[in-house]
Amino acid sequence: MMPAYTKSRWSAAFFIAFLAINLYFLMNLMLAVVFVVFSDIEKDKFRKLLVHKRRACQYAFRLLVTRSQPTHVPFRHFRGLLKFFRPRASERDAYLVFKALNRSKSGFLCLSEFYNIYEMCGFKWRPYQSPDPWFNDFPDPLRGCFYLIRRLVTWKWFDFFVYAIIILNAATLLMKTIFVSASGVPVSHDLRVTWDQVAFVTFYGVEAILKMVGLGYKQYFHSGWNIYDFSITVLSIAGIIAEKFSSSFFYIVILRPLRLLRLFKMRKRYRDVFQTLVILTPRIISAIVVIIITYYFFAVIGMELFSDYDMKNCCVNTTVEQFYKDDNTTVYVDYYYLNNFDNIFIAGVTLFELTVVNNWFIIMEGYAAVTNDWARLYFMLFYLVMMVVMSVVVAFILEAFTFRMEYNQTVKGDKDGDEENVCINVGLTKEELRFVYSSAADTPTLQQYARALETQGIVQYEGKRRRTRVVLQRRMYRDEIPGWLLEADREHEDSPGLPTPRSFSRRWTEPADISTPSASAHETPQQTPPSYYGTLNLNSSTESQRNEV
Image (cartoon, rainbow, N blue to C red; front, side, top):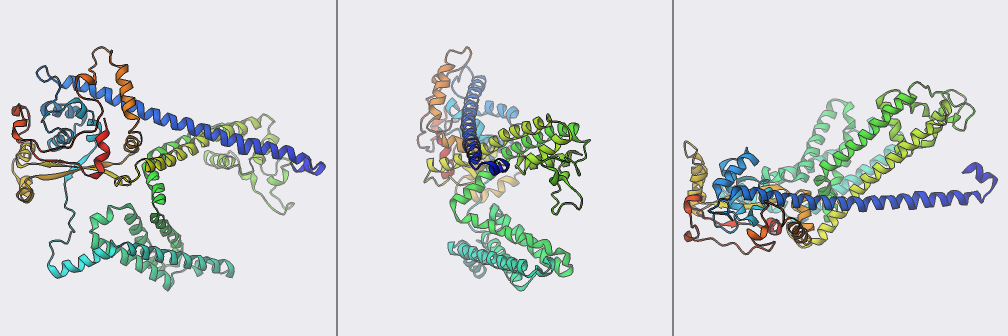
């Protein structure tokens, strides 16, 4: 641009129009198109998977029913299915899944209940732990002290006070950094541990101890934020101790700014960023693998084409000659000769600089000067491919965050919208426990449930599974799912050998409230586990499962 601009000021109009149309309009338009297509693909993939699971459930249900009971599956047949579908599932887990599915409390599974087998088999079961504090059985004076600590650490103003200390710590660190930059003293000398740093780390250590005492170590380490704070605190204390013995540990200061990330916990929108990142971590790793494979592909080609050329002091009498000089004839050495294809790692660095558009034309023109004009084709092709790949990656990230924001708006007001796990509670009676643990030689397991049986008459089990993207999609598209399934059922009504939902159960409707059945509800008790009683308690975090197929 500048050579043409020196001859005519009007030449700038061409470059301005070119950049405005291509860089700011067409590039963003391509990103928008990729984003829309990617969103439609994700939604259609979820729809196809949902329909596929529904069809698989219909086929499996047909194989499990008998002529005498053509519309219901007993537990014995269901247990046989799990031996192949979940071979590691214990007798207890199989029965808990069966009872969680059997919302009608009939002792048999109808097709509408059997549709949820994919979701229910993903739960991990364990005895329900009472929400009472861990120190509830301690003597009164000690229990009172622990109770006050618990009230302190769960007080909302306690968190605000901690945030204020973190902000003060950040301000202190910023002032010290400015002072070090202005004074010109060695960083290793001026960034040593001082009294203020010891005071902040001591405060963070006391905070961690108070929370572990008040909440209990299990509840404390259940939170990812607490694990993060505890790790930073332990590393900071270890760094302070190590720095006292050797000044070479001054680099531990890099841990100080990491605690600022905790401030993202203050706002719900900021927490959504991290929750979305955690949910999509496996898929983000897949995107990174795609980028690495693309780099590897072009790096190998670049090594075959350009590894024999020495770029030092090359490109004589060209427009990029000054960038490749390595002698005393130039004031500023640009070191562009280091961007070469000598091995796979250096080639990867060179390609990364081309990706971030770090004067990519200088690298391209350098190799075009030492080889021929066809070398430009390699660099332009790499730029176009990476532009598409990065657009897909950016669209992937945008789709993830927009999906999360739309999900929050759709389920606004739901208490379970931000929980990390989906939970469900199932109760077992004494007879059911004996049936589940009938293979045990002794009864130590039954003895530990004696207290719960005496007080409540049942033993509660809690099932828990991660709130994955599929779970969020079920909530997000719950108004559209009935239409998808209705259309899929119509397409398969005339399929030979395939049972239709109309012949087995009602269509997608909101289930009625679950009540405890009477003993007369079991028409054939010999086909069901003994004493099929107890309540099926669905907590608030499982309300989302009521509309699932």
